[in-house]
Length: 458
Image (tube, rainbow, N blue to C red; front, side):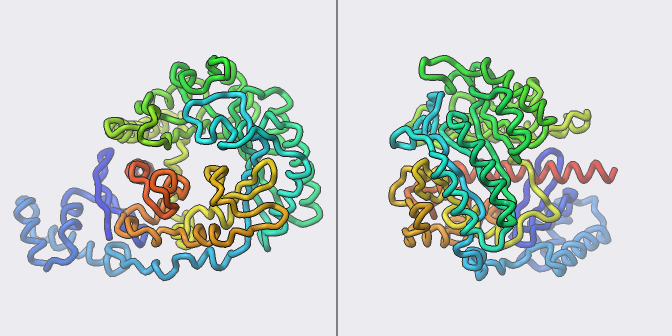
């Protein structure tokens, strides 16, 4: 299976199952589209008609090159991966490598689009005790098998509302590292209101990454990200984010925004972040019920698609000017990247990765917290809801009939189980809007990589 498209002045052919990417001229692009399943003479005859100035030698040479790529397994490669589906999860059954610690089911903002119901996750406000947090870290160690590197994300709500417990848990983990030979990598996700010198200093010492919530333009950010008095937060958090990022040397952070029906033209928000001095950026589409006023509408999608294309061009322009920036969804590795097992099996939610509530319950990931049928167990007894975990263990790209003929399947690995559930009621469903946006992002990301390589060669 191949996928062909034109973007940014590039003619791109992606061979889905080999992962090979070819940047070709117009003649080769059109010949590849006709090649499979047709006789050589029929293909050449169609090309003579479309390209009357091309001589026979050129046509024959291009046809031969396509044939050589096919024989080398770099074009029209067969899909041999279906039998591998689920094998990685079988091999790593019972091994947990990462936890999302919900240290605070409470928040000091009242964001209208919050999937977590303003941090309460459809339940009561709560904060995690130190004892529960320690037990969660011990649970991770006990269930990590031979893995050395373990990951913990301090999440909420707003985790800085339980900051002293966060610091004590990091200290506890560092002690356990010495005893167990494990290595913890911590991430903190924050809205920024409570950032101070202590938070900055501690994060710079201990946090592998910091995720900062900013929706870009002041008028957009303050439309949604308000406190309980209805006041916007932009002016209070931006200077704190700037201080934190400067203290981190401009590295190991992400400025994460959400775009909604109010700002499908999110490139303006990206530009605002750049003007503020931030260069590690992410903008995520809101996931909301269709009747939610924040939800992206059918009319928004073409606008968003155009924004992704213009974003890729902006990245190239700034790179040429010596002012590069990173966009999370355009970070792809065309020479390596995840192994095929990982590409098939997906993110590992519910198996390798779990979320822990303030009282120690286990869920497949942060977006399932509060959905009682997906409660897996707790940090004392471990996983007791074997049926729910089996549902996630079986969730891979080949478990979804809609994905089997999709060119992007080995890039998205079947997509986000939580988004699928909230859109369709099933973790093996397909969130169609999310799929369309993902495919556009991948086309733009691949085009960026092709353009960069071309500029290196010239």
